[in-house]
Image (cartoon, rainbow, N blue to C red; front, side, top):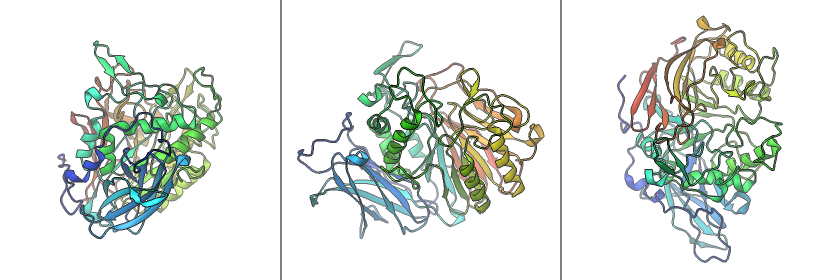
Length: 526
């Protein structure tokens, strides 16, 4: 199938003009990230831009951060001129949420380009408002013929590779924005809370990589303020802010939002940390995560809510966002013959089976923050993901995945595709019971992309339990290659509204398409 133009036909989505996103190209925010003293004169400012998330057919979330206490007000319109806008009164932004806030928009028309602008008003004088910041998103179309296009990737600001202004920052976001997707799925590792960013690093060829630095990124994150600063760091990049103002997100998390390879109940043996209880760190990170991303199952500043959820994207697509971190058992050699907890936990597994069975979408994308058949180690003896290197019958966490795959087969659930990141290279795996030790499942595909802005790493081995065949892989031959040496990877999914075909393209910044796979709807074992 030929690579379709990123500018689709008018029936699918309106073509955005430069004026829509210009207000997001703001001056670099203050690096301290702290709110000014209350005595500071002036009007509230939203220099960190805006972003939309978890957009559906009739609703969506809009996010903003103020530089001081302010009331969030959102106006929406069908046109850029904001003629006859609808006004939405949002929350009061204050120090309890690090001056961030999210407003839920309801009753939106489906398949429509929504233009929005965010005002921040003085709590004591609503007439005093800052300069509005604008954005746009398209609500999910309920008409199959309109099709769906989205991008996915993960792994941002890792291994010490931060925002390099001499290279124009994270230019991959500008390239992705030019693809004009309906949404962006971030498959985890949105930050590297355990990875400090220094001012510079010398590359193997003698070049010097220079980073923007902040106090919160100078050490491993432990406090709530430090986790907030890690999430805020990404918004220092102008490319990210422009992207956020045009492309809504679906965000999940993985380990580096808290700490490398973490699991519940872990007690750290790491001299960099004064707080050794990972559960304490995870609570702080989840709070900051919920404050800095618009997620429908989270309440900013609250302790309730969850990351796993399903986003209905019309008749062609449902996206099942997993959380393979919060409910897992401890990393181990993974050879236990019984494992009720696994990597998802019993409650999340039951939810996933139930929601997959209920789905009537042609395609069911399972957004997995970790790969299934790739062997990801945690030290010399333990394993971090599902696979543990034993190609025989399922053991350890593989038992839970086997139960899920068996359920998909026996309930005749078609159109499941797994998307992930995590391993810092890009690849495509086809799983087939004819090659597997475990036979009771239907064939399926798994696609890997990333990193967006982190170090590149060599490919890991495959585990034969579920019969993966790696039809494509591109990875560096040494660990932690810089983004200057290994340009970022991201994936693109196009679902054609007429045929229902799903096309996956694995892309690299500046290099176009590396690999393409076209899947047919309703078929098994493609």
